[in-house]
Length: 235
Image (cartoon, rainbow, N blue to C red; front, side, top):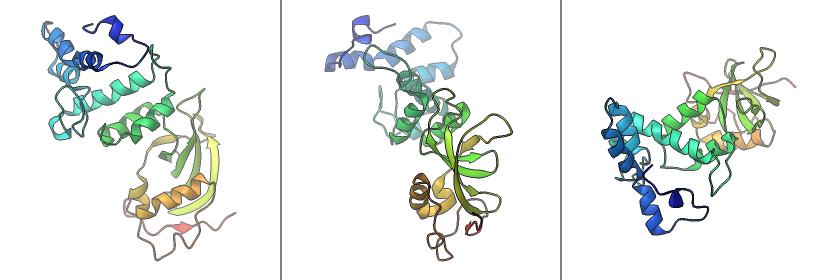
């Protein structure tokens, strides 16, 4: 409301003066809300701080993570996701999966725990995400699903019950009990320690990790009270 339409809807890049006008909108919006009775402190907080970043490079005040409330950190995630998945005069919308994948790459922008919770809550997992499946397996998202964004293609490779690696199985998630589906995000390093990038590369290449890679000389799995992983002896 406080930004001129010529700036807000400009199809090209903004110059420095125009960008400074954009950067003022959190404070302008906060001032408008202060004139309205009954606005909650949480709404005022999110309005004023939704463009701050946890590394201090945001605006309008350059606050860091410890200076930002949980609500402000949540607002920052929601604001960016809404912006990049919406059609704007200067860009086409990103798909939900592509948006989340990019947001995961922006180190220092978001609170990582809040971003993980957001992804889990909307059930749209970007490619490369390690997920726990309904069948107590771990899998890696290998492709999005434009028709059903909450049902991506996943490659399962590890049994959390048997604590062993499985031959990779790739499938489209399903809401029915006949299939399988992601139920949350997992941390690869928490499960597999420093070996995770190598194991991830094997799985993405549709190969089962080899016995020498996960043999008894490797570090223990760090996830809840699990022993050394084994290699399944099936086909």
